[in-house]
Image (cartoon, rainbow, N blue to C red; front, side, top):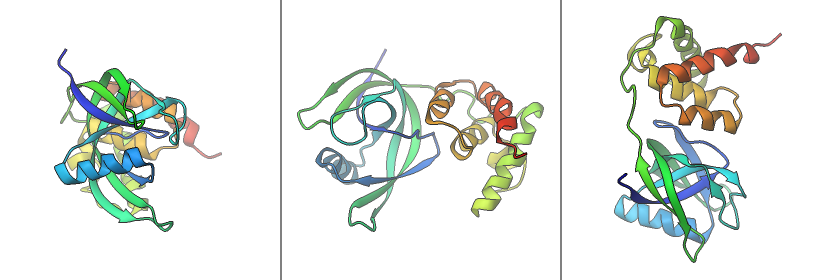
Length: 197
């Protein structure tokens, strides 16, 4: 299996393809990484932390993560560097090693974008309606229920996995699911848990 080296950023949250995360950067190992990425257009991998913490000693990352591309820089209210990253391809971590500065490097294999462009099946059409309502409340424009991205099984699944009140472990499980229709089915099965009395 062909692998590439990718710096890893273990976090207590999951980044999905097409999604975004805002991060505060203050540890020297990550400041150096962000400088390199900004200078050379490099990317890094975001993986859910399985053991350890975001700060301090290197944490144990999940074996499946998402490539992150920096799309914005800012200064946070507390004077730290803030970045916004966007999720790209998923990858599987084959092996890791830790540099002297504590940065985790992974040899990763890219996962194919399975089901990309497949349309929602009829049994999952309700999820397009739900996501449209969520996007409306968040003030995010869209083309309408069952149109454009809201008709794509993979995109609807990724966005709902971000927006619904799921645990990080559940989000990781959805990230690891290769079949977009199986991912949507898992979400359909969870919907009753989100309904108010």
